[in-house]
Image (cartoon, rainbow, N blue to C red; front, top):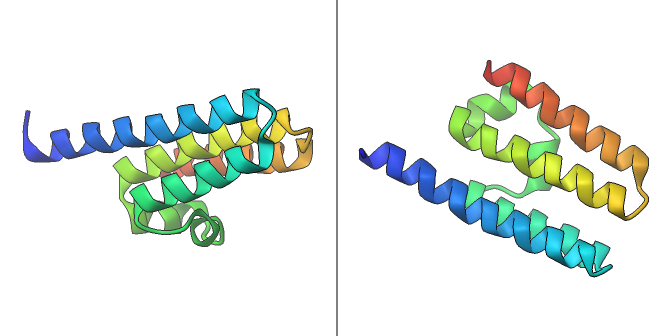
Length: 108
């Protein structure tokens, strides 16, 4: 495995651990904390706060992050959508899912 593949795999594992922790907190009813864990952890891994990335259109986010990191960002947004849904924030859930779909289209 080359350096780039190894880097991508390690990034995916670290982000996966953050997403799993956030989902665990949400299942325990800690909805605000779960969102905070997701946003801080994923932002740290991507090198930019999620709030800043959300201000970008999908194509700009993909150009800035690159396809591999953008794919991880889309996965985080899907998990964020689930967290919003668990908290009863349906409109926020829909928006997060929609943003993830747009990023996936921009990657393709």
